[in-house]
Length: 432
Ligand code: ACO
Image (cartoon, rainbow, N blue to C red; front, side, top):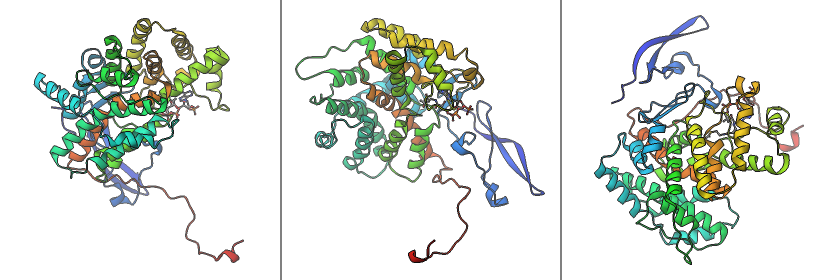
């Protein structure tokens, strides 16, 4: 059992001649936080922290990150051990239930997920309503929200468990349908005999005309990628899921909001931006140095996409694992590794450049994931959808943890108002 967070010390805030003693809590890895819950009631003051960079929004036992040391652990297990040895569904169970599954639990969970992959037939008509060139991320967000309309049973423990399974099971089907719709091909029904990643690859690339043989090495690589994305504590999309869920919105609605948050180019959308950046460098500029020069120039909007992270200030451990797998995948599919070469060159130069070194900017998970997705044949606008598939168990685990927290309250931050003080309304003819 993780150790409980208990008050250990106190912090004193002094302001305007008065002082207030606040409790300090300590997490199981030694991180400390000043508990300011009573601050406003006792002083009338709030804290301000744009982007919440120093705000702990909750206590959580799901994922631990030490950004300075480049550590990522799910439920205490190091990410590299899980990525190399576990399956995605095993990790999904771990995140949601807190412990690795027994053989029986994993078998039952896998069977359950496999049996829920099918979408209601009305869903195919739902997809028809979207324009052909619709980006698959809003299609996925809308589809996940629409699941609520098919599963309206009140929230009980049993229904909640079923909703979790449904989300993990149906996400690959929804993702593949979104893609098939965009290229005008018929939807491929899921096949129960296939494992999670293979099933997705077949629904993406198979057609009713020809059986699609899934390459087990590529399926395993995809499974590993999903594990790397499975959770990342209180990031933008997870915080969104928690915030929406804090109003007691159901799991489907909360996760749908998380998908919308993940789509942004500064978050999950960065993997698409990385590959587009690498392709632009290859097509137009050819030179990594030239691009880096632009990325450092504050008068330019260009950033080195896939570099930098709010939390990791050493190296993103997921990027290290992915970089290792790039060669394997590229060799397996026999495609040119030009983009990988550009990525490695960019990394090499950036890590010697004072601009990136002094700001502690290192490759993040998105820097190399795009190269692998491209080698797997995943279209660029589906990259963030892959991230969504991977993140699903993390969102579910975090949502569940929030709802089961005895201290759970609706999320409702404060603000510092900087607008006009009171003024009187004037009829339109009297306005200057
Ligand atoms: N290229 C060039 N400069 C950068 C980059 C970059 N990729 N990232 C940060 N910087 C610079 C900023 O301009 C800023 O410089 P300044 O101090 O001179 O003003 C400094 O480094 C700090 O950057 P912030 O944007 O303040 O850092 P923050 O923690 O707010 O942002 C973020 C983190 C959004 C990830 C940022 O590094 C970024 O935009 N990276 C590129 C997009 C990306 O790869 N996103 C994926 C993140 S991982 C994920 O969501 C799965």
